[in-house]
Image (cartoon, rainbow, N blue to C red; front, side, top):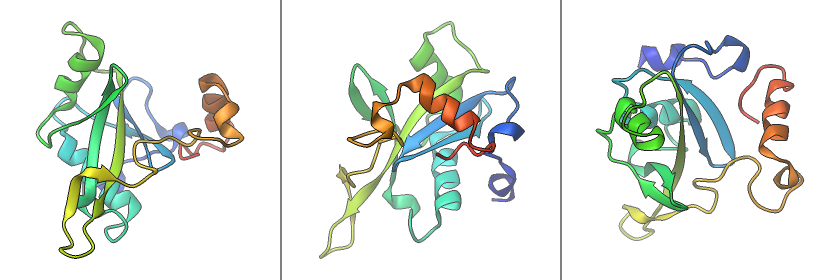
Length: 155
């Protein structure tokens, strides 16, 4: 858990030579430094730590890849090396940036179980999604806004 507290998502402190995963979800965006052995479970622990244990319990989180315009939820054991090959092709290796989407499951009000097939409306959405002023911006404009935000990757 100490490793998670030491990870930085501040743009000016991120090493561009290191592998990262771009976490997009709940209208937030983070750049998380990763290694080839990091798993989806490690990413979930980071979200749990960063967002708060009460707001994002581990059992409520899903991490996904978008492939062919479909959201495919990943297993906890998938490593960053495996995901890099899945996103960029069999010959690819880290360091690269792996785009991952995350969301929070809805909870059954009667039995208090997290429902794996239902997610909150902001799940798997970035800061520029939907009908807002930021939705009209291109990806380059959003990236430029992140660079000019004083170094904080969270828009």
